[in-house]
Figure 1: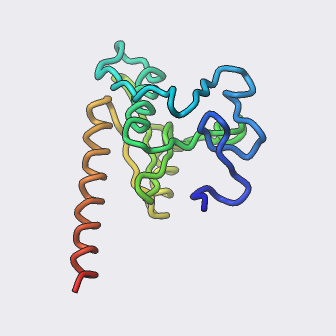
Figure 2: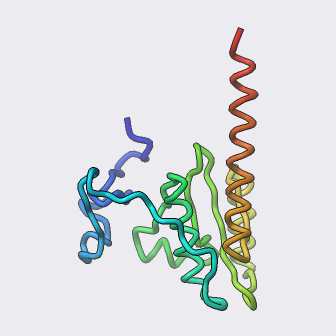
Amino acid sequence: MSDLPDGWHMCACGNATRQPKCRACERGVATIAAPEAQKPPVAPPTRYHDGKEKELLRLCEAELSLRGVRVIHHLSNRAREQAGYPDITACLGGIPIACELKVKGGAISADQEATLAAMRLDGWQVRVCWSFDDFREWLDGLQNDQAIRAQAQKGHTEP
């Protein structure tokens, strides 16, 4: 049984999509390898060049991939153009997470604040991260919280 919403499926390259192929496959930039030929993920560098938000986004997405978390990519330009939509949305162990990435000199817009506040009210774990280390610390904290909750739940169900 799939964890994806109705109408969604996994593309051959591993991206979630509603279309027969994801945009990466359509553009011919997706890399698809047989499972036995796939190499283990390589840890991303912990530094990025002075204030490039796109580089920070790629590092954060790579970190999520290393942790086995699938990033929800925006499949349409219309969804991505929504003012204030966070840079990263994903599901970490059944918990929806959203992260707005900012680099030195950046600022959170009113639309971004409003969107993150609404997502928080809907049960999302949200955060504005200002560096790769900040992002990793946030993920570590979320995963530690999950482990504690799982252990507590296990303790309540055992005789």
